[in-house]
Image (cartoon, rainbow, N blue to C red; front, side, top):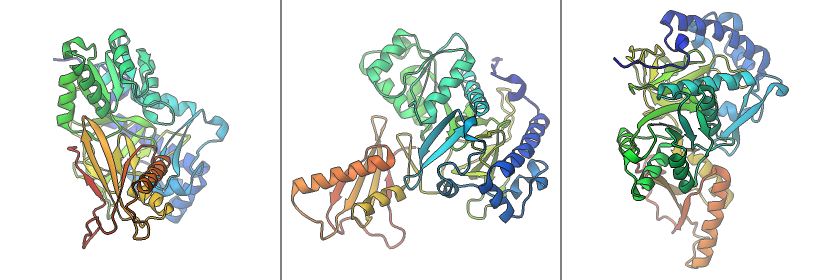
Length: 435
């Protein structure tokens, strides 16, 4: 029988009773912390008729009000800060639905807990002090790079902070430093694999043994392709900037769902329409409560991800419940090249430039990289056959979208009324990716 290794075995393999006791204690303390330090959430609790004394255990979690992207917009930039600013050691950020960014604050204690979560994910993927971990997620405001970087160092691995891009250098370091684990988006892993294959490298000649891939949707077919090309085992990881970043949940070697770090996060599944809490094993919207993050304490946050939770015992020995790979969204958010994109953001840019927001988004995946095309109808007043004028207008829109989204889209201006009308809800998005 295979012996599974753990980063913090005492908690990763704790009994259900022990995990529940930890959650009960931390939840009660966190509700008091939020009540005392986050006036915005205190008002939401008061409106819901809930006091800290009403929350005695996780059985009372359903009494607390939900948080959503709308709350993050309303409280930008620091209305959800749970500690004095002098206690904040770092922020991370992601784009919001209207261009306002989500800013998440971290105390040193928050950083330590987050890095523990990432370390657990790495060890579950086979990492030891003998490994060389190449972190090829983006660094900076994005949580991926610095999160896995911190987790790798906690395990004691030699950490290569490559960040994203510069494929030639990525491959050189993988070969020269004998990198054994790589952390990046699955689409970039696939691109690296194809690039190395074109260089004539076989899977046996690539030193990598495992990869931890997240930040965008990917299929089981894509997993198999990456594993075959790179000669590795590919692991999924889940996280949100609103909660901490990658490491909220992670795959073990059994790869039947991702273990949720339940000593830091309580997961619920709700019906996105009625908001009723559903039993485990039922498909619904995933909701998370961060029970010990102090800088940005997120209570009952609606992720909008649709999935299923499983309490079924895992043969790896870990006792944390598992979440399935998200099966879709309960809102209209798209994930393109690892970036959250909302059609409402695109509409904002179009209206700012004088267009009437009749458009179509076409997404595909070519050579393992997302393509992002937007067709925009010109108004009759704008319509022209002057190529230079059209090119100039397209470039202006592309720049406006880069400023709003942080990624590039190919914009094509089309004739008035050339985009097919629908009798029902307009078909704004055509997603041809097989994910």
